[in-house]
Length: 468
Image 1 (tube, one colour):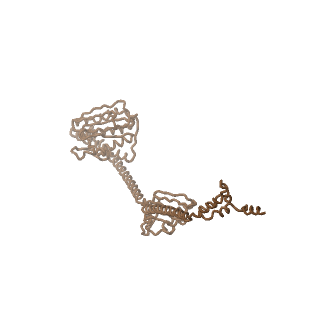
Image 2 (image 1 turned 90 degrees about the vertical axis):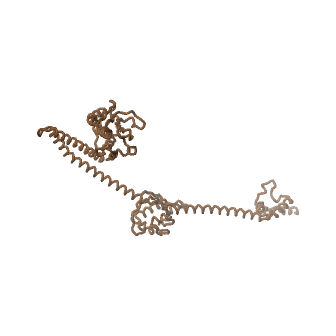
């Protein structure tokens, strides 16, 4: 019975846990003791704690009794300090970024604002936005109360729709009637405008971000420029119509004068003396010259009005040159000018034959007008050089040894009513329309007219037309 009693005393009831057994041994020791009490020693080679030798138990307890719990607390405090310092650094960095963003926001030249909630209460507005709305006190106010002059323009409804649907909106030159200067009178303004929804953490729209740039001055300037352009076009149309009407009215009596002079010169109304014949010749030449000027004005008016018509067909340039040379040969002889023609027979252009003749006649007339006696004029189809027209164009060049055109005036020589040498010692006739009309005619047929010239080396005009 005594042995049974000793066995019962040394046996731990089955209901007692390992933690309870460990707790009876590993008292104190702070975190280390707590860890040792919670550890499952039965799973180790040492086996359950109650089977340890007494000497081991004694050593462990002595060790745990020497552990200072404050060591653990110090480590915890150090860790907490490090966490606190890190949080402080992060908070300072975040605040710095916020301050920089706030500065950028406040200094932005564009108008920026944030409207919070379904009533669009102004939460933030930078100085540019406040200036845009006349420096009103809008912060903390719903949109409808802050800017009542927007009523009836569909803007309130537009913001409501953006807030409800979450779809952004943007527009260029967005028209708004707004009292921006605080005088109580709403005025028309234009903005490049963007409204972007802002969503909360759950993805729901809870604010609107507004960005606007005032382009009112630009729009007004563009409108004024457009009005000026339309006015100029109307004035130009009226001028062209006047010139065309005037030219028609002048041509009728001039043709009558030419006809009667010719009848008189033919002796229809009786014998004509030599002196009368000479006088009638001067009348006919003056009439022809005046009619030529009127035709220039009429052609210019037609070109400007876009009413010039072209009968495009194959044009053999050599044939046109022969016809025009026959017409100007007397003038060449009277001015003591020589001429050479080197036009290839196989050069065929596409254009209006009469218009090509008119261009060539204008160019030859200019060459004779500005070339002194004894000078030379050449008409040829040139070899292509760097800068010449493409190979699908036919070329015809008229060169002279005349006084030439200054380099700084070559850009304006084709402008209407420009006569480069009117102020020089040369006395020139005409309206200054010949070259302008010639280039417009060339371009109207798909070609061009260009000039190369030096003040002492004469001029060379190159006509280019589509080749057959």
